[in-house]
Length: 375
Image 1: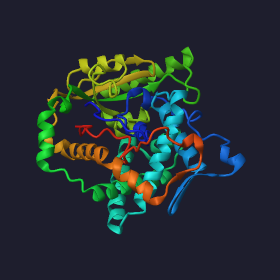
Image 2: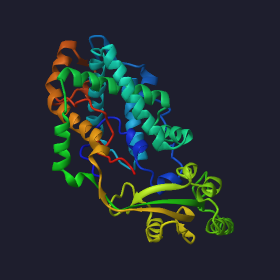
Image 3: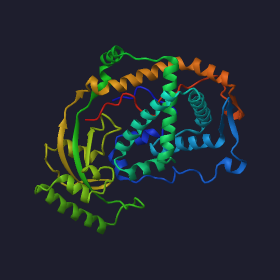
Image 4: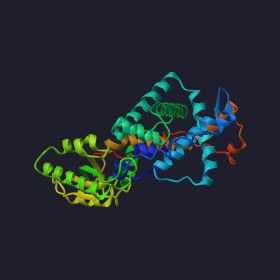
């Protein structure tokens, strides 16, 4: 499924929401580059106010924290923010923080309740993707956040969006959703996929990620051969995976992944050796030992899923969300400009003042709106 739109703020959601590729699942998170800096400018000069308006202030520390989240997220997602982009990015992040404060000031009790409900649902989706509490905390640490901080930010943003939808009277009908679905068939094509489980015997040191010695590798290979015999003898594969697999991203669900070929969707594909083995197996067949950069794998194919078009019922809520986002982008600029004027918003740091008047609409950020429901 193709992403139809990219958002600026909260890219920290992206690594949490990405389908678990083998590399990400097998390798520990590099928290060194993602941790918060030991010393912020506010530590030296005090937490100065960088923007203010009627009833709110935004301090340097708030902006710094958000920028750390964004830069850490970029690192975790394998992306690079160019130095010449940082000034503009910082201005836009500040603009988002201002918008959220302005919209929260207009939130009714009903808006807050709906925002809380929406953010709670999305947070549960994040937890489900992370598989385990430990993995979720590790992912959050990689972008410099805690669960409490993430929940708070998600609730504020969800509530701000609810207010904006209400104020602008955004309403998308079922007919509009159906028309978009019918007019964009390629957006809802699922490539051929497989449901496969694996047991990983890692040949990388868990602390340093350096390769194990030849002797250690031989011991891992021997253990893999023993478990392979047991799997082929009919022992429950999921139980063996939970006991022996060293892939923290899948062992708790019996080693299972559902994935397409990397050529069809690089975001969800596996490393070549793993992919080739999985797609060559017959249903319920167990592979020979497969060697990848991560170690030795025993793979079992559970199901081959033909290419198909995702049913409207499975994506209609995502389509509706996307169309709402499009409407917000078109209609919110003038509205937010007026809110800023009415609140007397001032940006006190000259470096953070935009060169051109612009407003980035508040939307649920960092989430591909038309990601199909996984089978």
